Length: 278
Figure 1 (cartoon, one colour):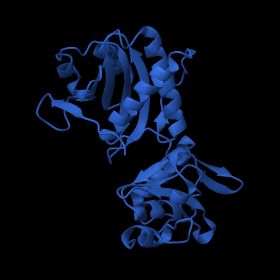
Figure 2 (cartoon, one colour):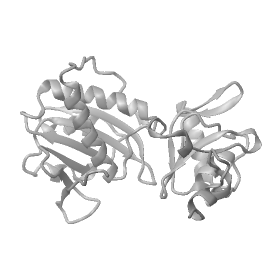
Figure 3 (cartoon, helix red, strand yellow):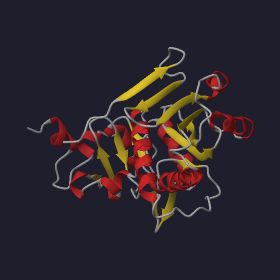
């Protein structure tokens, strides 16, 4: 049985989508979630000028990460002033700050490097870091960095942001598939969200009935997250949907019933596997 985790949160302006801080019980690291329009207000918070790393996030209309940038700071929120002037894409910053004894310069640099690598590996969103940090993580620091990143990943998940590469953590039995009309696509359903996995084929010849999915397809194609391989349109990212039918619409085109389109390795429909089990 997994161990329980206790989180403490402060909503600084009394709004759930405003400035907030998050701290795990007994941790020395504090997370600050800062909407860009409230950057000036966040500077008044005590302790927000400590060292750490940060994520600049561009959320789409469905509150999912579309673009991300990862950096390090030695002076906490002060580092965001440059990005406020020079980078237009982001609408929220999430900072992970700790005291200097926990985050030495080596740990900060190693953590930034590690987080950028993991962001690219996840294939969930566009990573805006054009230059990879030239930093070699010491083998003695790596276990500490991995432990800190695990906490970062957990905190981000509590805010609705998945950071991992879903397909790496799955047993083949958990992966769903659809093969209609020669299209072979793969996905995973957790009971709330459906994720279409990297490597899935997309029927770009058949538009979906919802224009937002057609725009999403076109945007991914323009960015290279969908490309033509051996005459097939292949997805090079993991895309999250609110429903199984939204996922199958995106993949197959038209209007579909995801509860019957997606099937398990054993051949059961998603409806049979989730709604009718037991």
